[in-house]
Amino acid sequence: LSVVELPTNPGDTIRLGSDTKSVVVVSELNVGTGTIYLDAPLGGIALGSKVTAGLLDVSSKNELTLTTDIDKLVVDMTGNGALTVSQTGNLVIPHLQVAGGDVTFDVQGGNITFTTTVNSFDTTARALTVNSNGVTTFGGALGALHALSSLTTDAGTAGSVAINGGSVTTTGAQSYGEAATLGAATTLTSIGSGAITFGNTLNGAQTLAVNTSGVTTFSGAVGGTTALTSV
Image 1 (cartoon, rainbow, N blue to C red):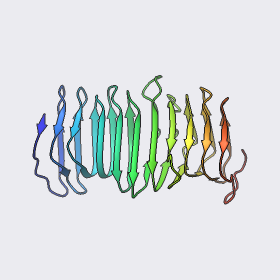
Image 2 (image 1 turned 90 degrees about the vertical axis):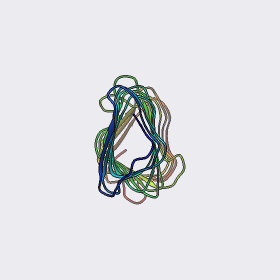
Image 3 (image 1 turned 135 degrees about the vertical axis):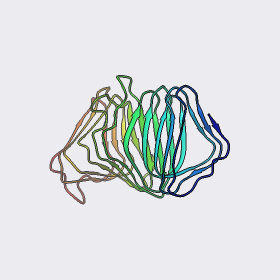
Image 4 (image 1 turned 180 degrees about the vertical axis):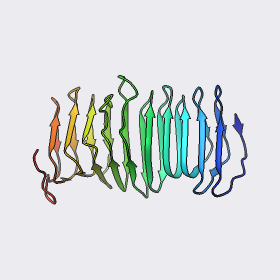
């Protein structure tokens, strides 16, 4: 399915899809606070421009790159493709399933919130990278069902990260580049002896357990603003 030009209006609901082929959209998709569904469970999705919507719901087998200005994102990656999202403004992710490749979010000018758990699809671990100059919030456990290969947040020091889901499990490294807070009793585990690194301060009136045979590094003050219950 190829779409060269699709007139849209604020508040529209648009569904484009193919059960067996790829979906190619050349024109910009802008429905304001409306909803866009893009479905290619056995193919790929190629977008030529930015997507603006209240909700974007996508299903793709192949690699998917999105440039967005949306409020919510629902993703089902059904094949081996990686997912890359470049977002302007706040972004909420109520559902994320990735069957194949690694996942990267780059959010500028806003916060990113994962409201549920995030897992690799199966025992093949996938990497999750989240960069934001706002607040990154993990509302659910990460890698509890199937471990992530690694977790990286803010390679620089901009923004902050709130670890509220209780646990993060990876096969490799975990790196938190920005100021971190704990919103629940938290256990961080690298089952493959990866390094676990906090590159900035760490606060929160919660317990913290760090389990790895690799190197654990706290580069900033721990409990300097709000003391941890225990480490």
